[in-house]
View 1: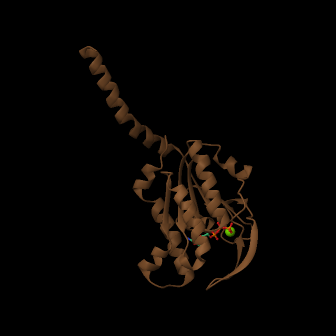
View 2: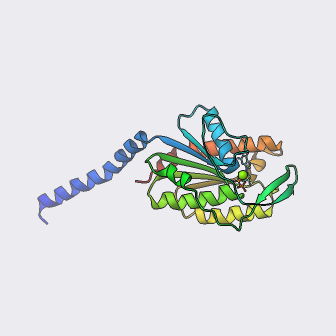
Length: 224
Ligand SMILES: Nc1nc2c(ncn2[C@@H]2O[C@H](COP(=O)(O)OP(=O)(O)OP(=O)(O)O)[C@@H](O)[C@H]2O)c(=O)[nH]1
Ligand SMILES: [Mg+2]
């Protein structure tokens, strides 16, 4: 290789090292944001983001009966396979989904990702919809090289060992995905001390927002 070829090669290399950052910046600026709330907790986070006036497309994937939805939010009805009614301290009777059943992602959901938006997914791990839909969508988004971020919470301990077990199991799987972030709801109690359940949930919702709005996260989730 002569001197001229070496210089040409170096110049090309420096363009390559500079270009991606600029290129990525432009790409992320152009893409519109699409918030997707999965399950009850995920849908509730959308409410908070909306109340902060964040301009984005909002879609909730959850059950019809949930009250977390807003009128101007797109909604995909997803009913988990229910198993039993269970009594949880402080919460009362709740329906528990059958975690042994495989989740099939409805076409309506996969269709959400047909364009090139910046997809930000929110879910509470532990229940059926949030846990299994997050896992399936992580695979789908990754395989299709979409620009995405999945933010999840691990359940408060009072939800019981079963929820915790499922949440941890899927969290471990999701951790191989660099676009996955999570936090532990129990840390909120450690940080703020005992509080009303409704306040603890609000704090957890805020934590989702905090993670989303961390500048580093905004850079990392860019895919290509
Ligand atoms: N941040 C926040 N987390 C919640 C809230 N409600 C529940 N969670 C957490 O999210 C986890 C999953 O709960 P849900 O979102 O109700 O479950 P789901 O995904 O709808 O699951 P299925 O109803 O079984 O399909 C729970 O273990 C809780 O730790 C909430 O209002 N705010
Ligand atoms: Mg639910």
